[in-house]
Amino acid sequence: MLTTAERTVNIDGHSLTLEEVVSVARHHRKVAIDERSVQAMRRTRDYVEKLLRDQKVVYGLTTGFGKFSDTYISAEDAKALQLNLIRSHACGIGRPFPQETARAILLLRVNALALGYSGIRPEVVQLMADMLNRGVTPVIPEQGSLGASGDLAPLSHLALVLVGEGEAWFQGERLPGGEAMARAGLQPIGLEAKEGLALINGTQVMTAVGALACWDAKRLAEWADCAVALTAEALYGVRDAFDDATHAIRPHRGQRRSAERIRQLTAGSKLMTDQGERRVQDAYSLRCAPQVHGASRDAIAYVEEKLEIEINSATDNPLIFADEDRVISGGNFHGQPIALAMDHLSIGAAELANISERRVERLVNPHLNEHLPPFLTPNGGVESGFMIAQYAAASVVSENKSLAHPASVDSIPSSGNQEDHVSMGTIGARKARQIVDNAYNVLAIELLCAAQAADFRDPALLGEGTGKLYRRIRERVPFVDRDRVLSGDFKTIADWMRSSDSLEDLSELP
Image (cartoon, rainbow, N blue to C red):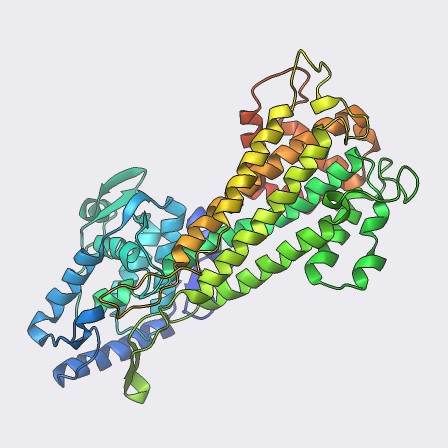
């Protein structure tokens, strides 16, 4: 039986999933282009060759780009036009994307081209697939895309490696593109008419960044429910707030799922209380957790839907409909659908961290924590315990609030005002990625605070699910019996939460 990592992902332009993107990007799963896609690309390319022979005026084929769309380019200059395009548009700025992100970008570009509407030769697309399979990863700067007219600048850096230029990682080394290709046994390729434009006109950068962020955000939402369950027990939470009777009459899917998870995790708990037993109701950060977490769950589900549509879309311009003898200049490269989704993802993930920090405050604050030791230390005064852990969480949450300002509401005209509205979707995706990463750190702090509080209560009194969760945490980070550097503990738990192993740990919880 082949494992998921060993099974080859079939690339046909129509059926790539978020999970498959993650498996190729992070776990180096192999890819293969579907033969039907090869045939579709070949038909379209034959049609492009016919347009060239007939000297038809087609944007990007026999014209310049952007404001130069009215400038005719002869057949003799068509090849030079494509290489000049790649070189001139490789204007990326800043540090490079992580290698997993660059691999996701490469995969998504292969999948979009495999639809067969871009006029590129199958050989070029196959070379990109070979780069994935042999571990040649383009060095792609993070900054420089407006998110309309495609992710032109970053995708140009990807395309440079195909022609033996630019830079790429191979076997842990950052190398000149041509050298990386040679070491992998791959031959750079010369670009024909239309192919430079086909390589860089699309939304694959913002979509790749967003796909990985969304995948991690889905898991983040699960961890948020785990965190509030453990915190609720440490604070003698009122179980009635999670009863399905309340959530059934406001049946948002995410809300009902979060409430269900909290009930499952705390089942059998001797720390949860009944309404009126110790108090009538809890503070919002506990009582309203299903409503807040659930709203974020629903936001993430919306984003996933938009991403999977975009992943399997043709986002080039012009698009070539060979069977209909048509070439259409349109706007599928415009990133607004993903830009809005990324802003939504940012807000959803930021709120998971926001409410988590408020629960951290309740755990450490002696006026709010139901007689737990102040700042969860047995030697208060001499030692500070988790006092500054709350500071760190508050700092990251404040940073997230700044990052969550929507990118999609901004636009700066470009290309001589021809491209006069842009999405800034790639900026939105990068911000969403940072917010998700920050939120993992905040939830890691909450989990450690809640586990520390459980030690003061008695871990044997925890529910079945929270008891397992507590033990998983303690396998990685011991009880804080005296002051120590906590930064490494936060990282240990955050890394575990992000890891593939944590999926198995989560699946073992009720």
